[in-house]
Image 1 (cartoon, rainbow, N blue to C red):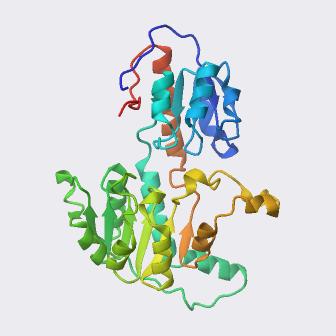
Image 2: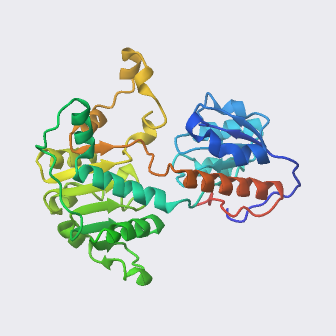
Image 3: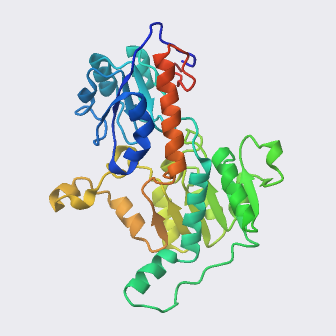
Length: 349
């Protein structure tokens, strides 16, 4: 639980870093300089978890498995701390961590501007059909048919969830001259100079752009369902840089195909926890092997001309990566010094 500490001194911690892909290795410099590190490009799984034998810390990313089987292997290998290089912890079996006595730390916050700016980028690209115009020009097609967008200035943006990222997104859209509506079960009184809080149904009905910035819970799962989509303004641009499970994908596809939803920008996908999508390159696989990972629904979704999908990369800026490394180093330093773990996750429910 929060405040858990280690009752004996450490020398230099040994850290096993999973999902250490090429694009992120530069950001690992603070970790490599501070500790004895092993960089493993593969994701953590029952087959790769034994590679951390003899290491004190298993450092995981959002696509890594941390099931009970993996946690048990960590325990057998001598791992004393699981350090997540992300905020999400749904892939971690907390009950298993409690059972085997391995605390978990995460990165509770990093550059909220990175994710908020990705929401704007997706909305802008879809509105002005940048992705389609780019492909046309590459092929020598300079016609303008089908590329008409709208001025964001003077339009209405709806922000669902006004945490740090939602607030950053609201400020960005307001800076474009948009009226910004917001829905949050717990409105922030000091944020009313930027947004006008309204009921969820009112936000759906009035917004030209809707951007989702909330956690995935039993309450918010499929909050964007057929009922919610039907209440949206015709032609709305829907953006999700938060959690895939907020949207019921089959309903979204239906409303896009009927023309009710104008466009969708998605950095996340509901099935991604069980689907080797993000951080994997399926294009290099032979056809028979690739088809084992085929997701027909996602293939149809991303094939729609007014849907733009990105690979869970909204966080991916130099500043965010630096924040993630710095906070991870801090957590491991606390373990080395037998101090309470500032960013420890609760292991009991």
